[in-house]
Image (cartoon, rainbow, N blue to C red):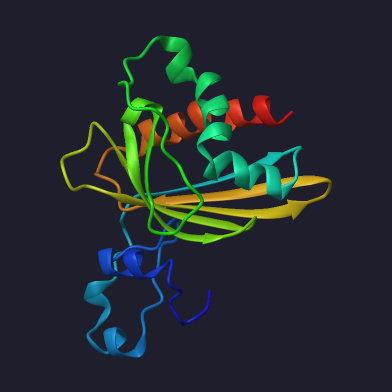
Length: 181
């Protein structure tokens, strides 16, 4: 890991966690204040998923409303009849833009986009307390003839990890595999 923070990492470091990693690289000024500012025990999720589609297709599926709507339609949340709200999918490939997914149940803001290789979002579930956000990071890379997506999420409320792990598989990765096939 680089010793310099990237623009996408700044929010994570402020919260004391780095998406999916047990340690945080802090700039020299912060390091001088001591290890007490760095959490080594916060819950984090790291998932690696391979898709048979190009990095460009995977990136578009995660950054455009029309494409992501197809993923939502194939999701476990949709199949279960879960009440997701009525907000249409709002998702744009623009840093700083707000997003609303799954009828508004999932919302947040795009922090950083590196076309076809990285997406960083301030991400929240509608069941969380007001103002609670996590950092979700999607790293996308060519892998053989397809794409490897390395996903990390940190900064979510305590005890949410098991629900989130299942939710990412059931509502993102499995439906994306079907949609992109």
